[in-house]
Image (cartoon, rainbow, N blue to C red; front, side, top):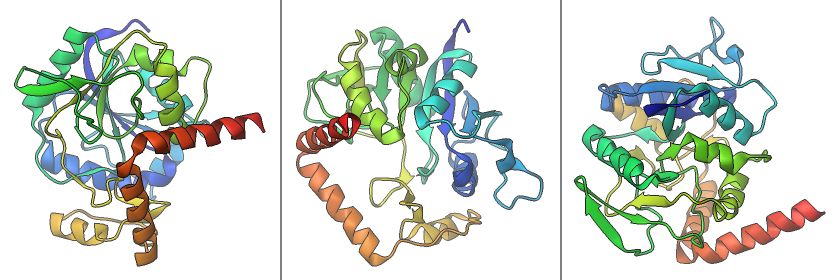
Length: 279
């Protein structure tokens, strides 16, 4: 498909997360009602929208639902979606990051203009991974380039504007999970010419995100998420269990270790991945 200029929004999900997508949709209707982009939901199967399904999504926020089909890898589903979307650039978001404050659309427009000016492959709309790189200012925002040797140069969190052709180049000949996409994609990106950038000094989205990893962990609801939904007036219909205190403590410790030295963690994960591939 020949791509047209413009930006679309893609929420990446799967059948088993339709309960969480329903909450994301409610949060988007509340906090981003004027989203000007065409909005796509990526999942696997039409079964998740079957009549009478308690977790079926009524697309009040999304304009179109893309069904990639069951049994495909995370990256295969992503690749399917970007090939269906007509715009060259796509704002990619994850389903369990639930909005908790209004979105500043003007700054997203400014970030998109930077993407076009820099011909960037990725522009991350948060500074959560910033390592003090040189900052440029313009268009009402500050931003910095992510070096080719930085860990998690490619990642699925935070939300980012992607060049869809860059995604296709990254995934050419590969089929991986979301986690391996971050690790392996970072390595693959070093061979691609397009630059990768991040917002500096702020994040363009506010989420319910006390752990830094969304509202679900290991299939369970992060502690406090039910109460958050109640305060916000979001209907949560789910059979998921809540994380225990022990689960939450383990998650917090892992997050703390990662923040201490993400480069070391990345090298260890990459070493483990390579050993697994060779075995």
